[in-house]
Image 1 (cartoon, rainbow, N blue to C red):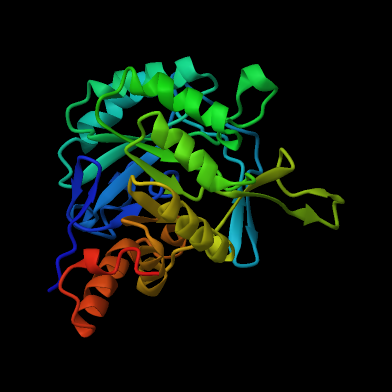
Image 2: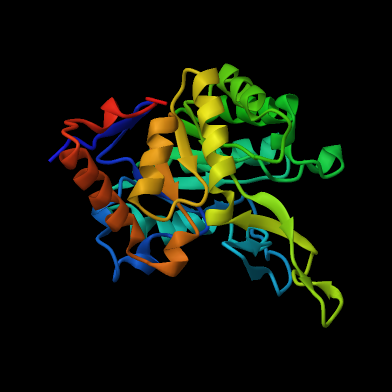
Length: 301
């Protein structure tokens, strides 16, 4: 068998297959379908400083080759996570990572600081696609200055592996990646969802309650792949690729484009065991092609 071990900053992972936030719950929901300890890393659902109710229903819609969602980061807050969820997941034998969201840099930093105290959470992933309430609702991740401000604030109060999840809804994602690298990010993950919309022609209104939502699934894969390739060439820190990955071939494409690891999101809804199938598929491809270590194919494009 080929070596599948990979490294994200100081974070060592047994293989490069991770789950994407918001699509795998807290991991526990999937333990009847897949051995959690055979996944490289599990990124749990988005966590905020204070509880959030999320958006009104309907907030999910199926589209051609994908899905839209506007869930709105529904969660019970970081203190509830620490007191109730963390004790249930802390002994899972894989890398458990928390996705962190906020409305101000201080929100992000305080949430990250509280997670910093949890011994068995070795990394966080910052969702900078959240609206900056002090800048009229524009997402932090759409400007270099906004993205840098969040990472700068968090880095002062968080000393473990810091992954920053980048928005694709920008002019130059490589510039955003360089900005967060300069402020101390250990890795970037990309892409987050693309803004999209669906219309119910019989009701003559948008399908989603807030009109627009994030598009994920196979439809966005070519865009995600291109952006991963661009960012991997622009920065020195590791890139985690995601966006429409459904099988091992998809994952291999991202690795060859420069990703050190990959995340699987929407495909979990179609097949709850897809993560293990992708891991095994990568292993089989490497063996069939005489590749001894997955690192040999990373960034070959």
